[in-house]
Length: 390
Ligand code: ATP
Ligand code: MG
Image 1: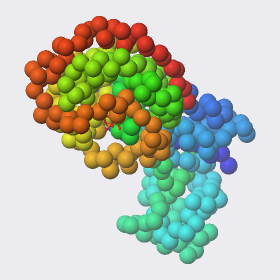
Image 2: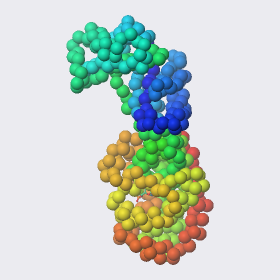
Image 3: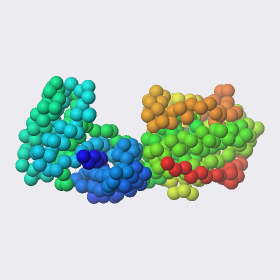
Image 4: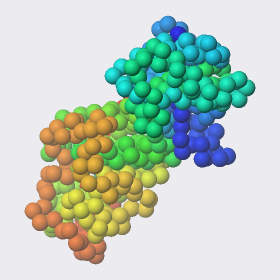
């Protein structure tokens, strides 16, 4: 019995004239990932992508896992294929479906015909499947309204596909369909989640990490590279740029009012990030800020940091509670790495009384005590880039 995957997409269907562009990106990503699981034929027809094994060495579990990390795919059906006649369909349903129905008490059979030349109507075909399953599993009950499981046969161009429900896909928009964004990636919980959320909307990620060696350690940097590696489960490839803020932080410590350290540092970060973004053709910055989470994330503080940037700053976590961010971090697998207790450059020289309602003029006055542009130029010289891939 041949098993295949049917990958279905949602929002993309609404894309009208641009749809083939989105489908192209999705197919490219899916093919690149599924290739690792063996020799599969991957093609699309009728708003469905078919993933069909070509030889014995194909690992369908691995292909399913790969497909479930591709943005743009909403559901994945693992199905067996039968010839398009009633006898073959019923025989396949009886052989294939029971393995998915252990411990199930009620079911509903459903049929769909993309190929309308099939002689039975969908309700007739569904009734036949239901009756056939009751023959092999007589204890099962049919429940049309609240079944434990829905089994389905889909009559399509090349065959009849029989499956027992859907696996959830990653959803969102295909990677690359929304341009490139530069993620400010700390070692914390929030920024990897922010990166994931924007990647899910089709943004190809690049990342920038600030360190403050020797106040921050080699291990802190390793941790951030590891977070990027985990994000590659969905993003495939992320270039991680690392810039040292050591000198800027020492200058701030020596010459500026302590209460403004964090705000000033964040303005340096934003300007450096914008420079890196422009150099690498990224159209937006992405941060993990969440309103009111810490002193530098009040509305006033955010407007002080934003005032220094001239490109959009996406903050997808802005309206999320910590719990919600943590739930996503667990789902995407970054949480355990994020909580490893290594220092971050934001946690060295932290002010005892950070300003939560800063005045921009006052911040700029503090900032003017240093040569902002020269310190940024110098920091750019410390840039190192790591190419992280799946
Ligand atoms: P996170 O959990 O993402 O570290 P946070 O709640 O600790 O966030 P902050 O430390 O104020 O908040 O940082 C806010 C945002 O600024 C981060 O989400 C991240 O996008 C960026 N950021 C902070 N520190 C760094 C860093 N060392 N390198 C790159 N970006 C950083
Ligand atoms: Mg942090």
